[in-house]
Image (cartoon, rainbow, N blue to C red; front, top):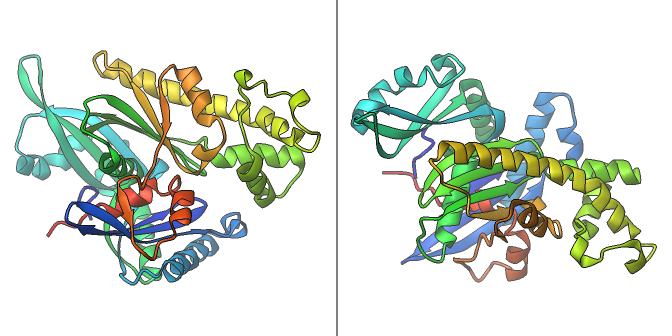
Length: 366
């Protein structure tokens, strides 16, 4: 398996939903042929039996294929979180062929696991000079063998043929690059606010330079709402989606300006803001670490995506605290919809589809 091979069906198996995108390239234009998003039953995710969880996800995968009408079984999927180790390293200059032959030996000092316990891959980012010697800037990726095996087993149980296993952060970069208006050398942070993880990928021009998964995300907002209103998780999730907002001082967002019925908006803001501040702290730590390592480079702009990015005012809150522009990401901005695609549904779901779109853009090398 390769993390960096380039099919046209992307399958994003998240912590709360399964998403699928099928693309078709016509001339220089990508067309969205099919898409789908199906929630994984919450009760199955809370089950303590791993096999029950796996079977539920397999059934959800089958359902998203049936509902979307996708017929091909060849897919690109991804991994994220603790199962993946990503390192940016400098290695002695050598050819790519030489590096492929020695990568296991070179990686030993950077991977906190026995090399025989992981699947390794790499990408050369460029060359640099250090102490008068030529060096390679290398992106090193390792995934635990048992996690990869379990992932492959789940896909095959759903009747699929996995062609490539990618990484969420790199799929985000793919999606971002096809939606850029024009090439740029600016340093941009892609921040994907998912259900259980927030993924950061800092890009300099066309190269990824820092990636990190933060375990503060949408479910943490929902849990605070659940406690505040004594609701079921699913009820709290619906309330967050329909009325969730972060209050901003300049909005004069106070009890005197909302009805008694809608004081829940303020109550939700009160309980969600500490979670957002915790996430903000982790984002700042990530930016500080990157900027320390990047020879005076700074993050100039944030591109925000993921289901939790739809929370009202979250972009304004982060922009205010970080002091840089924070923009929402239109995953399908440069993707044309086929006639069978409902444009309203496409717009409604594009916040969620960044990783999935990026996976669909990976093409298997012949």
